[in-house]
Image (cartoon, rainbow, N blue to C red; front, side, top):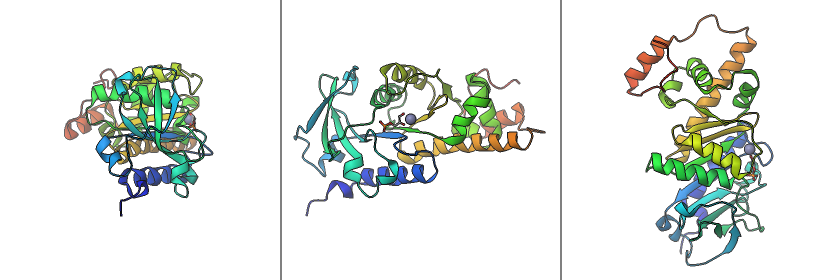
Length: 273
Ligand code: 13P
Ligand code: ZN
């Protein structure tokens, strides 16, 4: 018997990560969205890809991704419900040849659509694929402590990145390029997508002040791990502030020693050596 889409490892990965993001409190209600680039081969193992499906227009140019397949979370869908109803909360889409629409070839069975943040997701994919041929995943969530830090900490990228690096020893190893931060912009717009994608040229974590975070990576695990690491550092920062602030820290020299030991290059202009 032919396997169904629910047997696909990429569907199982989407279910698992949505459930974890919900459990961690980073995706309340319909908060958060994920898109995962798939090959035609991966998709055609489970469904007939010659099926046109429902066509949905887009108001931006994604022609660089024409013919590409993604599994994406649905607009207005709750991550807590993904495991019990994957074919309603998730969908597989194919970007149309003209780059200004997509076909839903599986899922969104209640008539739903891809996330309202599709402009940011697809624009980010376009940038990250230029930077890293192995890139496949864009993930957005409302990570609690990172959001909180955007109220209390300077929003200057180098200062923010340095604070995160200082809060947990592994941070500089996981995101040596630091984090990007864009101004506050209305979500779901092309404008926020363009601003985010511009920063995604050279970083894999972009903060949306007072809203959440976007992460990029080659796999679901790696992208989730990246966000988890930044959020953990932000949580430590919250606790350090609540305990009355730093009395000592990891020094710039120690951060550089770490980078040297792990063979990574920290973003220039942050460490003062
Ligand atoms: P969607 O439900 O459309 O994915 O939107 C959730 C969200 O987090 C918007 O930024
Ligand atoms: Zn959001």
